[in-house]
Every structure is written in structure tokens, then in C-alpha cells.
Length: 293
Image (cartoon, rainbow, N blue to C red):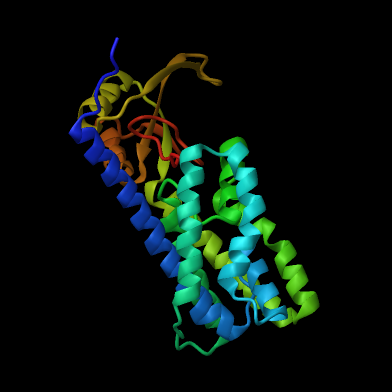
């Protein structure tokens, strides 16, 4: 039996996907490089993750360019990534690492902010935006991103949380070798960038879990499926005080859909009992918000 030939549309779709992800990584890497070359280096901050280690080495040995240091430090991390992350993510991340290393080599800008606290905050915003854009692709910029994705996939540890905790060693070394002030300014930078990364990667696609208890549960269920276009699950329950059986509606909606859902339910039953809770991740075809690494 002969293999089915690959259609032209499939090739075009694959090419479009590859180019889009490379574009995301190129833009994200360029933004991160602007923060490093324009703020962190002039202010003598340390940075985060492998970039922070590369900065410390560069401060100790100025003749060594940051781009070469960053490439060298990534070799053992990519060796680990080969075993624990998907091949697609691995190869895309190689592209992201090359983009970032090239941007570090060729971008030379100076951001005109002189106050160190403001510089730390701005660098955190820029870096978080750039790293978040990169992680919205199917790859990463290498370095700590790969380790963060491993922990996210295996233990559901949020990306920004991993980066914040793993950077403690960089801050400690920087404080010992250079100054405590620089380490504290870098801590502000890392905290802000971690928050922005979580916002860009997960926050823009937040999902809310909703539990609804109402005598009008049948009508509410129909309206959610028909008007909100979301699936739901009916769970049997029992009132702790009344002892009566109740039907609990459980559904997950996008953050933007929540106000509409609340108005709909209250129009049917003004006395409804409803609980809305946040979610860390949601996996699913239509409502999921877990990045496909």
C-alpha cells in the first residue's frame, strides 16, 4: 500500500506555523535583548536565570562577550531538554537560543532611565513581555525556560514561580561578589518579570471554574449550552442542612465570558448559589489554556 501523498495545503499550513513560531521567538528575543543591553548592563544588574549567570561571568571577565557565554552555558541545559521535553519544543528552542544570542551580539541600545528602581521595574516589564512572547510559541529562548517548562509539564509549577525561585542562587552570588544593592535591585527586576511572564503566558487566557446550585438547574444548563456555548457537568449533591437532593452544575468558561454567564444565570434565578474559582491550568480542545509545548 503506497503512502498517502502530502497535500500542498498541508505543506503551506506547516510552513506558516513554522514561520509564525520563529517570528514570535525572534520578536521575544529581541525585546529581551533590549532589556539586557539597554538597562541591565548599564545599571550593573545581574539578570535572571542563565542570562543572569552570563552577566556575572561577563562582569568578572569583560573580554568574553555575553552572546558566547550564553551559548556555552546552554549546552548542558539543552542536553537535559533532549530527554525531558518534546522534540518539537527542543528544536524550536535551539532557534530561540540562536535568536537571543544574536540579538545580544548585535543590539546596542541605551534606555534613558537613570533611577535604579525605575530601571529595575522597566527591565522587568520588558523582559517579562519578551520572554512571555517567546513562550507563547512552540519553543523558548533556552536557558531557564527549558527547565521551567519541564517543571510545568511534570509538576504544574508555574513558569514565573520557577524562575523566581531558581534565581535565588544568582542573587546570592551577585551579592557576595559585587554588592547587596545590585542584588536587591535585581530582585525587583526578577519579581516584575516573573509576574509579567505569568500574565502573558497564562493570564491573557484565564479560565474560571463555576459551580451553580439552583432549582432552575435544567433551564440554566440549557441556556449555558445554547447561549454561552460551553459544556457542563451535572453533579448530584445533598444539602447539609435540608437533606434535600440538589443538582450542581459545573462548568469552565473563559474570563471574558464570566460577566455574561453571571447575568444570564441571575436573570433565570436571582437567588442562585454560585461559586467562581480560578484555575491554574485547563486542558481541553475548546476551553484549554495549557500551552502546547
